[in-house]
Length: 493
Image 1 (tube, rainbow, N blue to C red):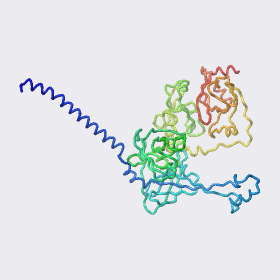
Image 2: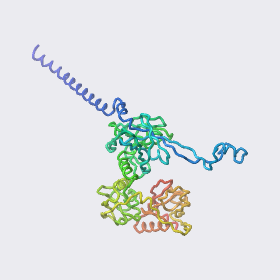
Image 3: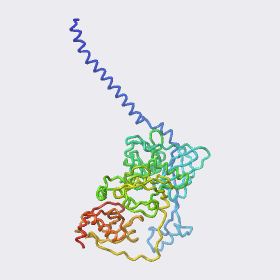
Image 4: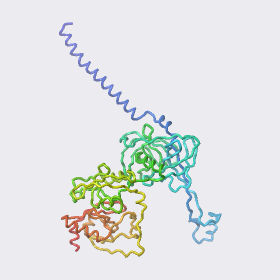
């Protein structure tokens, strides 16, 4: 072969060599991807189930409730057979016959000496609580403490030998897409297992201290109180609720995050109750409209709308202040502040930085206890209150909220304001969605209890050169802000 032919052969061989190298590289990358996938999604959950299932329990409760007396629809009222059926239903002749009601739920053991975690709603008002273990063994349980705010309860069983238990993991380490496994007693089908992924984190449903992990692992009635595990077998959530139009799982389940649960359990275990920090302020989020009206550069922070007697008032914090930092941590919004205050020890003195009239000030506040503040009831005057006076403002007829109105409209006990008793359908307020029965609880970011309060806020807005006033309107417990032009009030004067 001539030198020219050798060169031509090498020219042909070189591209093939590169192709082989590239192919081998792709195969190696594919093999690594398969190995990573196998690590994230195990071929079988059976080894994990075998290791931790003995720590998961079924919970059965029994409650004694009063049964209504009488035949109750068996025969018409006044029938000659009425007395016969009454005696048949209540042969012992008790005036208030009783019946037993039972419920099912789930839980898990967190210590070898028999502490069990479940949901508060599983055992609430129960007279008897039975805990069934994977082995079939049953033990009676006593309530150590409960926390309705996070729907967590701590139970205790007495066993003659150490019990298998599971540990809490760090819910903050869970990422959307991580694999999780739920165990429990769904629909009475004890010790069932379902698997899925973390669909979302940091979800809030209705509570001030909510921090839920959302998962598509099947959760049904009876799963309440059961554990949500990571792939290491640590509990990263307590299965609590589902979102479903049918009552069954549609892949939207919620588990209270372990970082919330551990703090609650530690307090229940030590004190038998929760002890959350209390700052003593009413707050709301800083919206774009509020930030513009107050001359703020951003919407971060928590706007103080009221300062009742308490720690913040004693320290000098006032309504209209914007809390921008608490105990060295920047405040993003009201939810973040509520959770941070609640997680701070009662009696601790913290630094609270506020924005007041464009300037920052720092206050030292010694926190009180939230539970004591909630339990405190203001003294009621002995005299009968006079009927509230109505007034027409901004095209609406308004009246201070009475107890009768509160009950009729279903307004929470901690909410006050002005009730819209009538509204002009040609008014701007009507065009913006306000209706009879709505409750105006704030105007100009301040609480309004009397019509005079609203008129004062309107005057302040005019003096500040604003053309509208921001109203906080509540309907069926749901708040929203509505900006109403002040020209409307001028036309009505």
